[in-house]
Image (cartoon, rainbow, N blue to C red; front, side, top):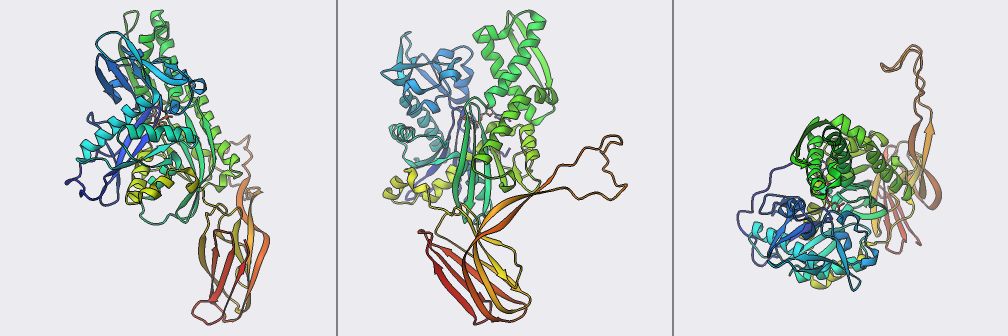
Length: 560
Ligand code: ATP
């Protein structure tokens, strides 16, 4: 983790808008800004937290927010609102209140989700709508950003999950407006994560297919994103609303509760306050286990007047949590299948969200991908970004990119339609007779159009060269591993039973259809031919082939 950034030396100039990125999660929210040198930094609130629990709590007429509010879950649960983001913009009948059992419970007020809260010194509870709760939360985030940056906030890009509906988007924009916060754009969390990584290099990212696995507190989301020429397209998504950090907390809660029960004949899970204490501490223990090999837990007067002290090591925890890890790996595999891709097609995996700090999850995912797939998580890459910060960072980068857009463009960009660009269904590439005869992909499937690519090929023998423009398909070729020479054994091969080695799987591109041919005549031996493909937004393809440094060439157009 990097140190909290210090506030910028001087407030931004008054004529440029100060814009921020907000990651609005069910469990935590974070805010980020982009410094003048283009680096996205996550801002700490007044308490020094960069992961700000999305929690509000009320005692008398006081409102508490973030970590302070979360600590009230033990003594003031029914006046503490948690895990509310996914309720926004939904009717009461369609929400799942399971995660609210140990905090303020949602109530139905004319079909709208609300919470009955005591917000004054007298003991009367009044309903507060989900929109109002969201407004109060966003207001606190906005004020923290404004205090830190020393200027008024001119707008924000907010990240949401890919299954956020239009009604939820509208409710979020309205709630932000009530907090005097202009929503510049709403972007999807996995795209924000890709942006956060790609913005590090300050160049247009190479074409690649990325799997983003977002592991939060209450849910896990996975998305396959294709990045082509700096444009991101979401190809497939998968969600599990009963899988997340809370399930891992529960594993430890059950483990410690059983130990406590054995020692003291009292089950701390049977008393609401004891359970709340155990949950809070188990979460801390879980986080410690992401960094070290063992963690201790210490709770005074946990239940029945007994204190509780115990230790758990990482190996034990990983065994207890195996089922949850299996489900996460299953979710990642399922979204790749849903995208009609193979695991070999994934160039990069980005682990996002707080639960992605768990080393075993990263190593389990690394096991299912080829070694060439980059796994971006703290446990598998020394240069990985903090997974808890990816959404906010990506949102801040996007905010700085669009800050100067006109109002009309901004309004359009909050509408999802503009993010769905037409794209190629098949890969397009060339086969050059006389050079390397294999299919060379120039534009991969899922490339958003219009698009243009140029590549050069050496023609060793010269003469008349035929450039074939083809559509290609990706195939997975399975072969047996090369037999080892007699007598050579791996160190781990046992003498008696040699495990059969797994098949070798490789991606190959094959020509499915030749769509055009161009002839370049009289090419000198060893010259280079440059081929340029241009696909218009109507999918019409134009081709130009020329000899580098020569006069010869050919060009043509194929209807889309
Ligand atoms: P959601 O919307 O799914 O509820 P979120 O996006 O609001 O999630 P995140 O901050 O991404 O929330 O994830 C919160 C979860 O991450 C919590 O369960 C928390 O315990 C877990 N977490 C945070 N840090 C670590 C860590 N170092 N090791 C393991 N888990 C962690």
